[in-house]
Length: 151
Image 1: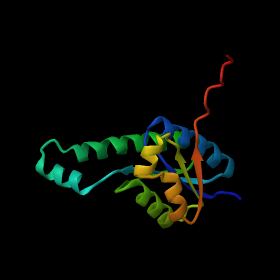
Image 2: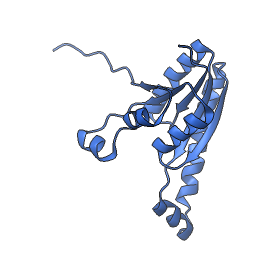
Image 3: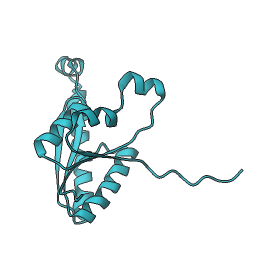
Image 4: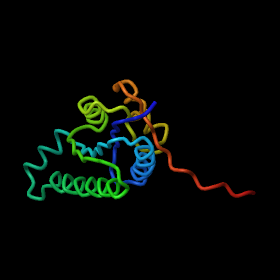
């Protein structure tokens, strides 16, 4: 299958950079257009907290995410990949699924963050949950581990 439109989830973390690198390789090979998505996690308490606080941490977080997104789009376009950035506000799983549907992408690309069994049980896995919510393929990028050294 040739992927024509991809949604690449990017947050600037090591896992996000792995997804950006591997997604860029695939997009380049397929000639795909890339929608780069960064999600600002929101909750009722963070929104209420911002309205009561002069520090405006939510606004700072949004600016930071926009900077990360700009960096990612720049990296893609420097490689000759057509890309557009999107910032979404909400829960990452919901926003990724919503963006994939709205943008009618063929593939979602995201990085993998290792979690403890308890954390996976408590919060769930983004990749597994997206399998249930999306109507397209999903590529979960894993950073190549360093080669093992002998005993």
